[in-house]
Length: 118
Image (cartoon, rainbow, N blue to C red; front, side, top):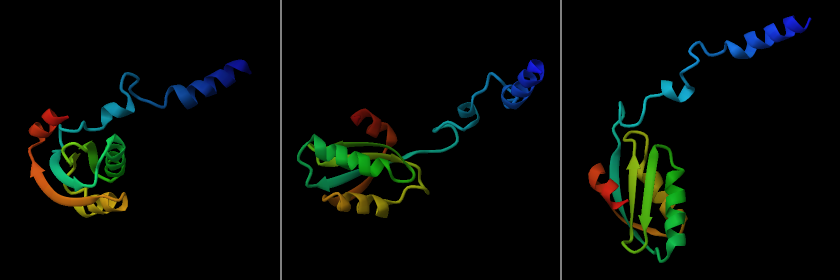
């Protein structure tokens, strides 16, 4: 009887993955391999401290298609890496406005220069 229970357990859980050396994340395409990221520089008015930076970063990071956000209250800017076609600048503006700030300008930037600022 024990053998039957162990055998059923092995079949149910041990054989669920046909390739034991591959994890589920290995099967997903990595960002940058097949999907191109784009970058934006957002000019934001009203940020005065690191708490403001965190508020902006949290709000924008939660949006669909946004992969990375770095805000700087000293510069009055937020730098956003996003997936074109998924991320929506209207939603970004709404998120910033809902947090109590003003989005003054949106400027496209090179992803390489953005990574240097982070």
